[in-house]
Image (cartoon, rainbow, N blue to C red; front, side, top):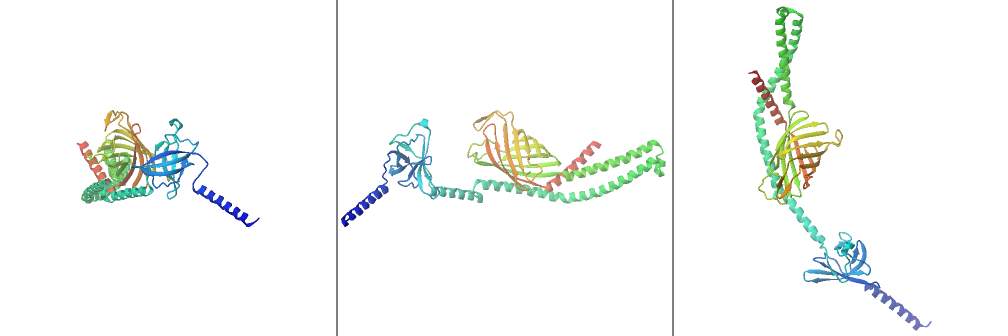
Length: 437
């Protein structure tokens, strides 16, 4: 083989390789494609020659991206034989947060028909990553500003805490004024109790001797009638001592709990506050009185809110192991409720389930919507620690189903409990004086 032939073969091989490179780099293909045009308001950095994927499968490429008035026109080259339905969604996808972008087609339904070649379809606008991050940062800054005291939530919490502080100051002032007298009263009552116990012991001995006819007393009461009178007198003294013990027990049996609930309802874009007092005159039985949905009814609601502002709660209830049943006025109307601890007497007993039913004869229109079914509420609460709990509840299960997220603060006020015990002693004395008249 001479040198000219070798040069010719080398030139021919180089030409074939050159043509192959041009074919590959020029994106030429022996497959047939049909065009589809997609209108966007913003393609969020979608490049030319990007892939077109139908339900995650590659079916073509982007031929050209151009502007037409205020729209962005993306020309797709879709492989022949691939059917795209008219109700499909066209949107800009990405392999990851910083990965390459492509045009994603979410396939529609056959009943809508097939998109023909050359048709123009609308695209779903996708918010660019940088804009989404900027919007998220603005939202976070707004939330931080609200918490720091620039929004309605901070103002409402500030007003509530100021009211609670004022109530606490008034109660402390009342307790401080009555405490010296109460302490003196308790010292006297303890002394009286000790003396009565000693007196009862001695009276029992005397009664026994009288019954046996021993000593001077036995001789004096040899008359059966006189003996019976002395015995009755000593018995009455013993009963009086027992009554005093019962009254003193009331002072220590009283327990008072202060409760504040904050309920946030995203659907109504607002929060509500409940404040009240739970009174236990004895173990297992309590009374509750308070106010719910506290706030100004002159505020313009941001969204539909079917709650009645500033209503009264007044209930009586019973605690029976894992169950707490109560009935009375719930949100200003008659009703009843049940709390159940499914994991009672275990380390998970902080979880409780709530169910309430009220307003059984409801038949009225509230803010443009007609209600004719009773109100049913259900929820779950978790006691995070001794004072604070959190949970979620669904209101109006039979009507509009409103979701609320709740935060509860509950603490025992021993000063007020002590004060209620004194009031109980005073009322018992007044009742005794009235009956004696």
